Length: 136
Image (cartoon, rainbow, N blue to C red; front, top):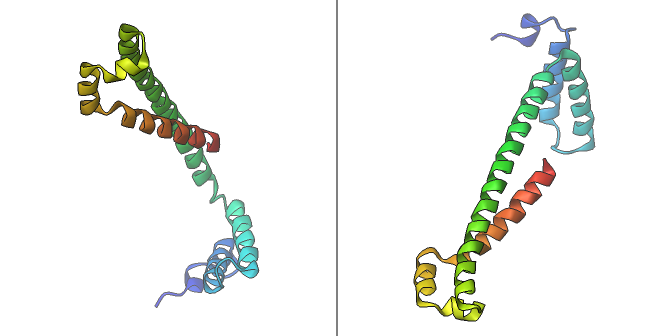
């Protein structure tokens, strides 16, 4: 069996890091003692330059996610305008929202595409994307 001290010099920073990992894994999760060990691990990882790649990767992924949230938000706005225009066509024709909703053509189209359901989902997605954008 290959031992850690045979692979690495016992005094090296990597050996210390592996020892701290082992020590932290044996402790109660979330305990103050484990948190102290985690801080030491973070210091060693920074010293060894092990956190740089993940930070850069995270920044790139976060920027890409922000772009995708913007694209989705713009698409929802276009969809919202389309639904509003669809409903407004009937309202303008009848000069009354109540009559427009009872129009047989509107009723038929509404059965097919479920305008109210789409509007409710649209509102929910807009709120969700706004919340996600704030977190980013």
